[in-house]
Image (cartoon, rainbow, N blue to C red; front, top):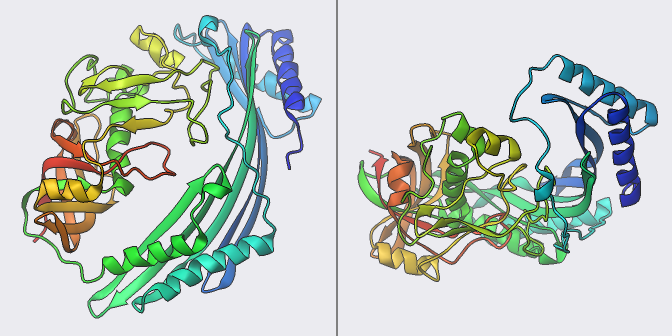
Length: 442
């Protein structure tokens, strides 16, 4: 499957680091990656797109004191490695010294590497992938008489491996896989057309839902949206469905990320220890969950990852920091160079149905449109669609509305969450209930 094994990648890494030292670098770090995958798209039971992907990359960062240079190549030959090291050093010579630049603290580097069960090969022939796509789409087309068209079904498998190494004698290897099946269809009635989709994503193909289930659910979701209405402008309680609730936590992560904090471009600057969210809210980071999509024992700088509580009882207990942003803030890295690892939000209700009953009357949001979120001020305004809920029961579909508030008020006004997070989502965030938002409609 791959053209290189783990030992060969590690040897390439050592070769590049030795060359960097030979050419005068005071420190260096390197990422070497290789990926292999296939993507098949089917529409109206005909093959629309077939793509085979095979990539490799060697990225090296060198330091001359605290001046930094970075270069990359897809050529793993000895001469190419020498050349890319020279290019990185040439950049460093023209770069200003930065007192916060440099490798991660050696004392923080990972020393234990457990099995996160991240790699599950799924070797499909083109014909097999096409057959799965056709089964998925066919199930969607047959689900309901209102399904009038299809935007297609897709089958994708991706396999990757990489090493990270640096001149502090650290070298770690990891490999993983990500596989998915998706479908999007159009439903139509006398009042117009609606589209919706569904997909499954997992490291292990055996964890994917059956193609027929994915197609059928995509069709059901599209049909449920037919004959949507708007609402009178006003203030309403809102529940963010599990398919969109993760965006609320993404905005929180962005506001608590080191780059935003040291640049003073976050509404959560100097928020450590402060009560920002509702008192029931706890958010944890769990980097070592088996088969989870964001699991790892080391971050992009080789720093060891650890389970931790980021929000406890609504109070900010941690930021998301790399070594650089941590130094800018006078703090220690949280092993989040390269991203966050399997966030999980606690819940107050077992199901979304219970959450709807607790809310009574209000909006269930299932789709968000636009990018109207300002993490400097916290202002939030996005197009939305979903369902009106009456006496705890979904009453009719809603479209053509805009929901608005401030993130500060939304987080403080979190009334509850359901234990219904998508099993294949990177972060385990269930449906979230916000006490009130402004809805612009009629």
